[in-house]
Image (cartoon, rainbow, N blue to C red; front, side, top):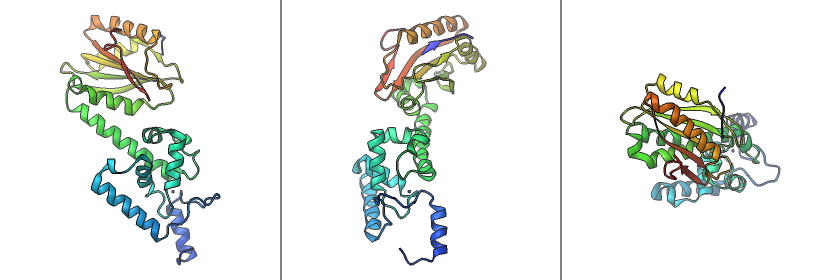
Length: 260
């Protein structure tokens, strides 16, 4: 990061055509791994749902949770092989739902409908975690702030620079992505950061960016840029509470590390 200023029954052919039109991801599989779901598949789905309803998310491993999410996209297809392929490619449930749409479509069996279901899960999770920090002072729900930031940004494949703008009670005024860059660089314009804080009448800000490598360790450039923003903001009555760096492997706080 650097600073710069400037998813053969007895239905008719017509009925089958209508069905497949409604479920675009339910395509014949050339490798024969996904088959039309007979009664045992329906029973499998019912057992999964019962287990989830009785035991919650902890009662199902990641691949079965993905299976259930894909039920709506693949009405008559065994979704287990697809779920396992997704995990094999991306590594974890979080990485799957956070992956870019085009990369998800590289997985055999995944089309627009399946991508939509996965992205709905991600969007719902983001809305939930953000709601937990909007209604209370950010500094009093710091773990919630960190959970939200890692969810919305920790799995991105390109750097993003985000600012949380707070009022004098440390409640969230705005959450804005100020810049998007490459795999290892995002331009940050110090004057624009301060200008936007003043426009929103913010009393404090929290700086955030991600390291697509997964390692959240701050670079020398990260530290220098943060200090420049602190120096420019202080005379105008705007405090920089922290600079948080997020990645797949966790987060780093420049304040906790005593780098600012």
